Length: 465
Ligand SMILES: NC(=O)c1ccc[n+]([C@@H]2O[C@H](COP(=O)([O-])OP(=O)(O)OC[C@H]3O[C@@H](n4cnc5c(N)ncnc54)[C@H](O)[C@@H]3O)[C@@H](O)[C@H]2O)c1
Image: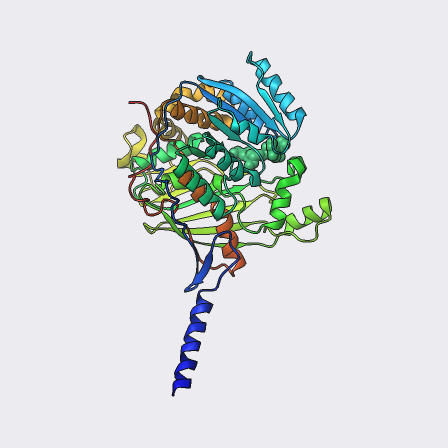
């Protein structure tokens, strides 16, 4: 009888342990009832929520740039057009990259910046007392270690996309920002594109009713660029990592429209990929690599606490036109940007002449669409639009992003994109890999606010009153 009881107990225990199987993740993770669940670390002593975090206003924002390859020099150039900025330091692995950017500064009539050249030199830049903001445009794996070090040395940080490549790195950013009270912004520029800003504003004014389905993605054939990344870091990363390795351009604008961690939160995802038809061929032909992890096309479906669904796609190999897919579906309307911009709204929602002609199963006319886009462009964007377009950077959105960052830092305001956005948008990289590598299993999305996702009511830009 005793033996029978022991046998029964052992079989129950073994069922429990198979349900709680550990999986290969950057933080402790288990499969519980078929769902991969990651452990939320305890908030470190001395840390507090960074929601709506403000820092002391800065009269002048003194900046140091790390990473001056294809992306970094444009950022330095844009900063030369922003008031209240001093460019103090430039850092890269290559002297030639630094020298080129010094020419941009002298061409704009600005003094030379101090130079840091070499693998570990960025630490010296971060150690300086006369720098307020460290702006990081290096390869992906350097982003979080550099940002954490900079925040620990009293600097605000701006990090190119994705800010973090693993769940552990996402938590490192959150914990360091919460503890040091330094801002940590991921430079997700697509939320500042004109269509996305206007559609967000229309959504906030209720033109689409209740939003319930959002689409986004990054579909861009990178064939002309693979060999240009320093040390070939991007192809090398994709060779070793399955999943959506570049999710932020797709997810960022949808999360702003869905008020993620400002009234809703992503709860669970499942991800699926194709075989690496093109990626593996490029890897073999250019480097002789025999294996390649990242599938050519990755699709991820994410559910939210309020019962909405977001669909995100990634493909950097397809011979097809560029697309970020961006689309919002609501109970009363629809906005889509690719391949052609289109908007559906109900007549009674808009106070414009052409309202009678509105029909919900057709896009409004191109004339009315453009009128709506202009009407709902945020005022701050209207004010700087001309300058943004003339300075450039993806048609002006990059300038608007930098302008807003500097404006908020100079006025001691919360940033448009906070550390939780950086973590939530970047975490899809590892979570999609976990789903795919475990038979497309559902994966819980961590709550990086640790329970505070419903405290702020809706997304908004901060301004001086
Ligand atoms: N937001 C956008 O639209 C957009 C567009 C392009 C690239 N990006 C992002 O920008 C980042 C950079 O991409 P890229 O195309 O310029 O790559 P890149 O390879 O051209 O440039 C990376 C630079 O970082 C430097 N670097 C690497 N390690 C360093 C270290 N230890 N110290 C100092 N410098 C170091 C390299 O010397 C190189 O010049 C990536 O995160 C990428 O995803 C974003």
